[in-house]
Length: 182
Ligand SMILES: [Zn+2]
Image 1 (spheres, rainbow, N blue to C red):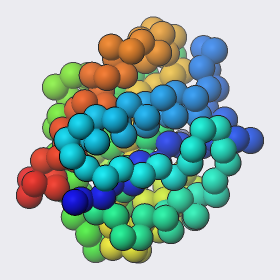
Image 2 (image 1 turned 90 degrees about the vertical axis):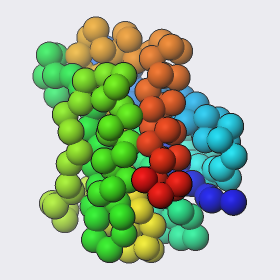
Image 3 (image 1 turned 135 degrees about the vertical axis):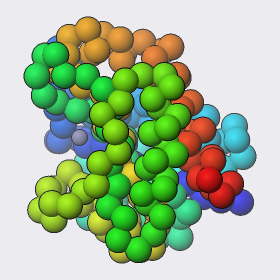
Image 4 (image 1 turned 60 degrees about the vertical axis):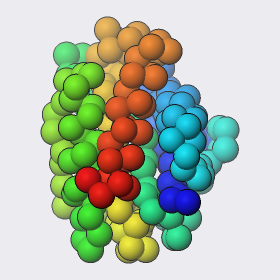
């Protein structure tokens, strides 16, 4: 059975982005639970790097990836009030991380606007340290910035169950395609 590790961004003393009454850590947790459920429905063994509102250091999250077939971190973006669209980041040192990112982005852009896949090249960009550590363990890793919570309309939409299921179904389908050979 293939194993997938989901990493709900931030948590505990680290709220991540805070905008329009939404904390990134809370949304990341809800979306991660939905993604976990949808992947389990497809028959995968799914783990989480944090349970509930806990603080887990970034390096440790990546270390936990060892032995998994896919690592997927779930985050929400911050920018201008007008910014919108999903981004799928990958590091792609020695695994097929780029292919994983492409397959997930291809599904996401069927259900929302996309700002494309993005390669993490800045070594010191702390939020993406998880990708490098997971990659270092030989695990294909992506970080999904689901959308911008700094956009008031988007913040409202993202809190709906429908939107959450729609987006996480797309991510689950992309991961499923990757694990079935693209
Ligand atoms: Zn984040």
